[in-house]
Amino acid sequence: MNTMKNLKRKLVYEGLIFKVWQEEYEIESHTLKRDIVEFPETCAVLPIIEEDAILITQFRYPLKKEILEIPAGKIDPGETPEEAAKRELMEEIKMKPEKLIKIGAFYLTPGYSTERIHIYIGENLKNASLPEDLGENIKIQRMPLKKLMDLMNKGEIEDAKTLLALLYYFHFYWKK
Image 1 (cartoon, rainbow, N blue to C red):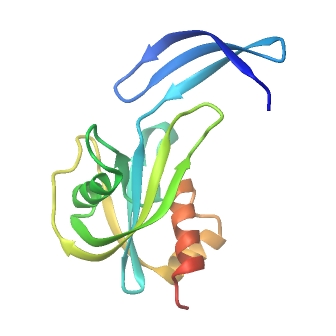
Image 2 (tube, one colour; image 1 turned 180 degrees about the vertical axis):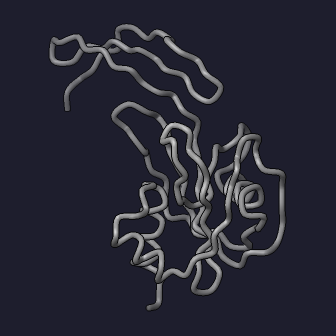
């Protein structure tokens, strides 16, 4: 493995949610620069009720369109990933899982971002709610798992965390 020496680190942008750092480092006698997005950890949940999943559709401003995805959000300071997962479900679909099965934790874009997402399957859902975050205009959609598999096969699910959760669920849990 190559040794790397950090030379400089400069904050070039600080927004509401993330920071952008420009870092300079030396590797194999070469000096390189990289932009790094420092983003808080996040969580996402695939909620399952019988042979259905509950997904959400919301407008994603960077994409300028609505997208179908599993409920997700940032992990607040002092909150565990499991606590955040339950909170996000209560905010976004007005339900709380009695059981969370951890799929894993993954880096979404390790080439330039520190964002790591914890993904769960949520089962035994009960009604419970918290207010939505400001600016979220969420539409809740209960969909048969078979329909979601068809949407995946047609390339109509564009969100990576949603695809990962569905593929995992179909591979390890789904009884056709």
